[in-house]
Length: 125
Image (tube, rainbow, N blue to C red; front, side, top):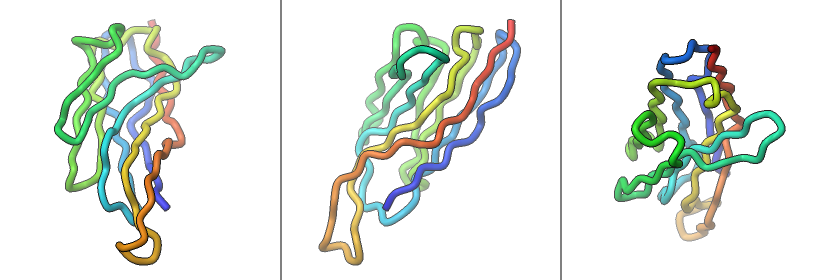
């Protein structure tokens, strides 16, 4: 089993900054892509940013130049640094991680793709 623990969401004024963290734990062998998604009330969950094992990144057009995704492979953690926040960034932010984990012993491996519980980011105007 793999668990994701998110933190860092808060209420912030427009123009402010926040840093989200998401730590994966469990019987992890390797992690491939780590990403952040967000869902505003009444809307679908949308991609914000992803980062691959080689640190290749992708961003939604709406956050390019303002958000930076990074990862710490030693800690199985992905971060989202958010700057110049806007009211339209208000949403629940979810991390998503995929990789391989083992059950019982390292010869018994399975792929996983897990979601965090979500952390609320609210940007006031």
